[in-house]
Image 1 (cartoon, rainbow, N blue to C red):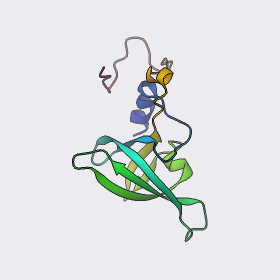
Image 2 (cartoon, rainbow, N blue to C red):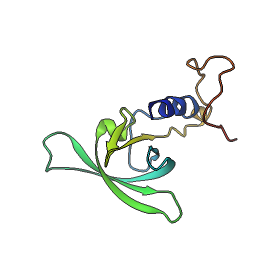
Image 3 (cartoon, rainbow, N blue to C red):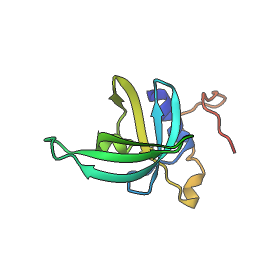
Image 4 (tube, rainbow, N blue to C red):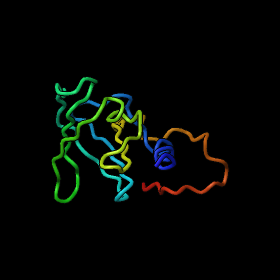
Length: 121
């Protein structure tokens, strides 16, 4: 999962924060999936001592699915890979700013090294 996330960071610009109305990229290890979701709401989980949030998402699949996940801020802002039900997940808001549509230059990939992800234009 760590390698997939690192590779995604060379192909997609992510925001440092996540707000209502943002599109997030959700990566799951099992089953292997990469989907977009629309953030529709946040509600503080008052039952937890630490800062946890009920994050409401509309997964953009066919058919669309509404889910609410209870996550810490670092988990829904792409700062950490986390597990749900023992399976690894990564969630981060995509930066759709016009200048950000061009992926950042990759310094981590060596010349001639082949990517496991494919950029579709």
